[in-house]
Length: 421
Image (tube, rainbow, N blue to C red):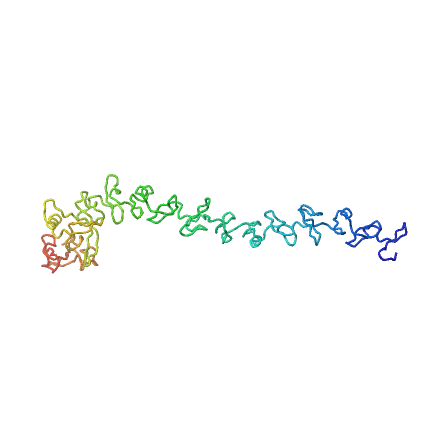
């Protein structure tokens, strides 16, 4: 059988054939031995021994475009038209199920994500968490997200509570630092009164969740912040004397500090330090007044002083001298509660210097004779008498400025006299 294309001798017919069976047909394009004993292309899948017939060739599979290509299995349903191999996936589109959303280029099998960049590139989120693409894993993944700037439970949200009361919650601002994780999530200036430390804004408004001042005395009392509510919205210990009743004991309310006086009402004497009018008297006959000294006059403290009005009609200065002591005059002064009244106060010095006049044992220029000691304002001085005894005195312009029976200026010009012994 030397003729090309017919190399095989059939022993029965003694004819030369192109093929005896399919095994003699090695060319992929003509894999079938036909009835004429010549190799030809396949005519159908039934001639390919379990393979598929495609344009005369027997192949492993056909790209049929269906969910499962002919010749492939459910586990590897896609036929590659070039290699004729069945693959689990060709592109990421063939991997719709979480967490295996990516088609591996080497194995052609669906796999989980490798990193956040891969997820972002596939528009499946910004983070790869345990092999699954998620919207976020931390706040940085939520930059520019329409959901919000904070990451909570793998989703971008408007804000998140971080449990750290000392810091602003993620997604919130310094002015509204607390996240309310309701629906919708919102940032609030406060959650409870504990979030409102400012004295003039101690209450968290239940409607606006903004810190506000007090509205009533009762609100302050209920919150344990005092019994008084000022016009500024600040809760204080008191804003009237009635707030300072201690059982059966009445105390005055200091109008400057809005705190209750430690003195029992009416127990503070003339020219002694006070913080409320009630310290000085129960009937209003005395008031707590501002005493000043110097030029220009500077406040040195507040002290109890007797009202100048005399029901018997004595001239005011005479009334003061008679009832308080010589050296006191009726002067128009301001009370600690900012009321202007006529009251009996030392004419030329301070209460401390007036009270210490003629005390012995002082030292230095002023010693304890002044309201604030050696560095005082010149309201009190320490002088030496004829017996070489040092005594306290204070400035005067006439004998009427000095306690009786002491005159003015005969021992030291411009100062009240002291005892000679």
